[in-house]
Image (cartoon, helix red, strand yellow):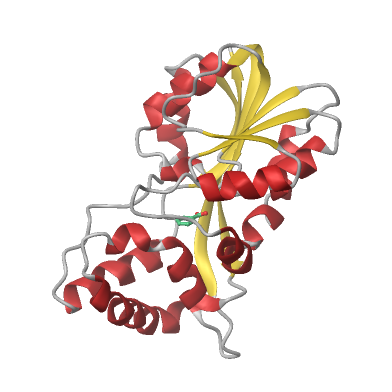
Length: 253
Ligand code: BEZ
């Protein structure tokens, strides 16, 4: 699924589908960990364009999607999903959900304590929080190359754009906010990029360019791609991204 974008990033639903359609497609494992049941009320946090939420709903669960992007929420609604624009740091639901699900969205939410508290409030006692997100080391080559390219072009780099916790860090966060961790794993998952690194950077790198004048963006991104080619492009010219997934299931105690 997708993400809650930084204020500097706006999503275009068609662009997102073209460059990041693999995100929901690779969400099957975390969806299987959720194992939604008919009749359950499930909150999909960072539902994006709703592709994966609709698959969850096909089991007979009632799925409510929330995403910070009005463009992606509109795309999710067009799929028939009950989707709302909202901030994952300030979930306004209380206790009515059997499960909160999230795929590839939590790393966009930079105040994780507020997010996890809101998720706990949204769940009934015994409800489950099942999610996958970027974990420690995620897109390390890409962020290192972005940082180097910004410096080579005399531009300042932000401290960091995303939140990629280790398994231990996220387990502690869950436990001090009323969850019992059932399973948690940090998994390397090199991810083929259907539209190459250019498509990925165009879709996701906006937070790194927030302080850069628009006329320099293309040069910074071209240098980033050049630096990454030896690591992320194979001899047939196919690109992949160095993803590390943090996947977990936790129970509201
Ligand atoms: C991810 O899914 O890991 C991710 C996507 C976009 C930006 C950063 C990370």
